[in-house]
Length: 154
Image 1 (cartoon, rainbow, N blue to C red):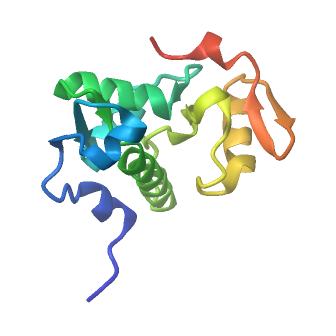
Image 2: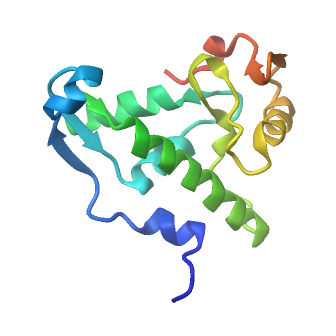
């Protein structure tokens, strides 16, 4: 069986999204209520909505997903994995000549930290964001967008 492309992984919703009750084991970390396990496409759609010059954090994506599904929280693990799949699917599309790809480089981690797991690592994300006018500094081993809060999507 051929290995799935990143775009195929993005399209495969595996029966998601799904809202579940937060289990007792999970409640120690996340409190009580419900958790939404989003679909890859939902995460990609939010990332696609970020215009040039703006940024969104993975936590903001999780907040939007939770609100959309009426859940207490959105799963941090699957949301993070789907952000990564979206980025790789976008690069795959770019390599095949598509120009209108998901601007994944506008999705940053908490605190404006760049994502070293993106295609080309944090260095590539830094280049892409600088092209859009953002200032990036290195703090320790991480790259961070200066004044990232000013550019966050509402």
